Image (cartoon, rainbow, N blue to C red):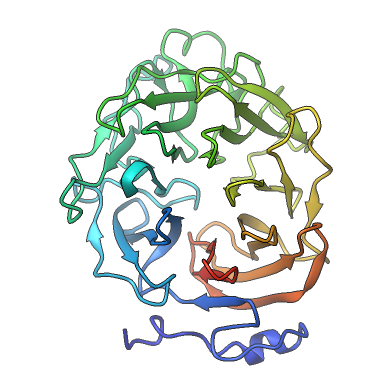
Length: 396
C-alpha cells in the first residue's frame, strides 16, 4: 500500500492543539489508519482468532458496491478486497446510514447485510410500488467469494434507514431493520406505524425465519435513522433504535434478548424531542463481559454500559466538551474495560467533516488520549476496534 490514503497519517499538527502526543498515525494507545482511496463507510468485526474483517463502500452514492478484506495482523495490513454484493450497483450510501454492516459468527463465517439500492423489495400498500429490499449474504466455505445476495423482507415494507446484522458463536444470525407491516401499511400514516423487525437464522445464515416485530410497544421508528443489532459472547442479543412517537419523541430505545432473539425486553434509554429526522446512527460493542452502546442526542454523542438488568442501566456518558454537529458514534472496549468512543463532527448532507475520539478508563472517566483530525469524506464515518494487545485501531 503506497498511496497517501493507504499510508498512516501524520497527525502531530492535527492533534497537537488538543494536547495529544501523536506520531505518524498513532498515539500512545490509538492507531489511526486511512482507507484506500475511494472507500467509504468502514465497518469492522473481529473473530475469536483475532482476525479483523472489514467491509467498505465504493462507487456512486445511490448505486455502489461493497468490498470485503481481512487482516491477520490486527489491522496492520489487509488482504486484496473482494466484492460482497453479487448484483453490481445494488448498495446505497446516500444519507450515511444505509451502507453495509458486518458480523462474524461460528467458525469465523462472515455475514453482511445492507439496504438495497434497487426497488425490488415488498410492495408498499401506501404507494402501490415496490421499495428497497433488505439484503443479506454470507461468505462461501472457500472464503474467497460471497453467496448470491438475498432479500429478507417478506411481510414488512417501507425500508428507509439502515438495517443491521449480528451473529453469535452458536450459529445464530440476526438481521434487523425498521419498517411497516404489509398488512397494516394502509392503516394510518407516518412513522408511528414503523416497528423494528427481526429475522433469525439457526443454521449460520443458510435459512432464515420469517421476519417478525421484535417488540410490541408502539414507539414508532425514525424513518431515516439507522439501528444496530449485536450478539455478545454470551449469546445475548441487543438492539438500539430511535423512536418516532407522535413524530416528535425521537428517543433512543434499547432492546435486549436473553433467549437468543426469541423475545425482547425494551426500555427508553435517552430522550430527545425534535420534529425532524436527525439521520443518526448508533453502535454496540463488547469485550466478552461488558457490553457498551453509543448513540447521538441533540448534536452530542453518548455511551453507556448496557449488559446488566435492562432496568438498571447507568446514566449516559457524553464525549467531553462541545463540538459541531457530533454524529455517527462508534465504540470499542478492550479486555481491560477501557472504552474508545469515536465520532464525526461537521458532517452533513453531501458534506464531509472531521473525525474525533476520546479514550475512557475502566470507570468511564475520560483520559488524556483524545484527538480530532480532518478528512472524513461525504457520506462516510470511522470504524474502531480493540486490538489483542489492548490498544485500539481507528479506520476512516
